[in-house]
Image (cartoon, rainbow, N blue to C red):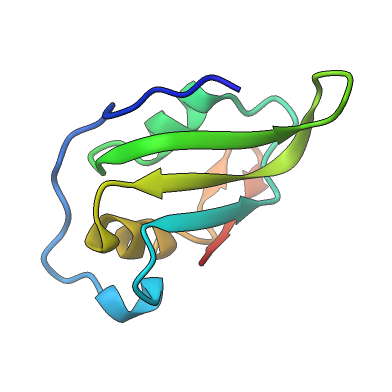
Length: 97
């Protein structure tokens, strides 16, 4: 796991439903492509201020297809949840708190 703190812009859309994040700055992502890297997550959430990315890997170092992303604000986490169902590669990812 590579942690890249503070990478990303600090622009969050004004029309974000903050309640979607339930007060949390961290979201759970699942159905990620096996090839997804931290950089792919940063690219997917381009424009949202990410604090850190934590992708799950097995004991052999292979990705497990899910992970957590911690944002700098609850508003950014809510904006991330709004992207649930969008694609990374050929997989539609699910994002929730």
